[in-house]
Picture 1: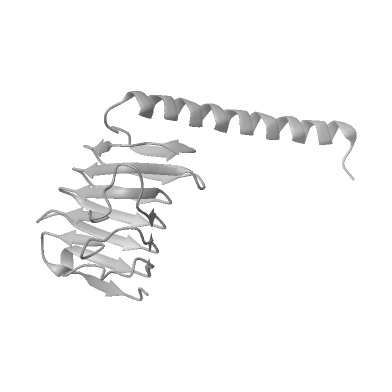
Picture 2: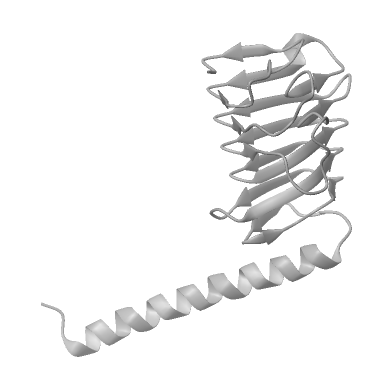
Length: 173
């Protein structure tokens, strides 16, 4: 049985860790809200709307729970995006990996727009992502390159649309 001193010490450490995490999240949100593009190696997204972002250097971006939403995301570098709620992704170059992301229609995206646009020469893999309904485009993704450049692995397609005209899909439903 811990003593009262040990309980208070453990509680103080917990409060300190939570305060540091909150300060880091607030600092990052302020930095992202002022910057027109992300130039970070690792971005931890707290709750908030990070609309219209451009990745111009290699980055890993991780969403922290529900409420981390990105409107239009333009990618011009290598990236790994995980656990983020996305509206529209324009992948112009580089190699991109998306894990456990949710794509859904929302503000700033017309309902006839694709969720994903992949330029020729860019490559993307979507792992465990969910594509919700709400768009009326022909496909979830518009692939400007060959099928091998766009891969869906273990994704859930609730949109009612075909994933893409040219793509590779493994274990997706």
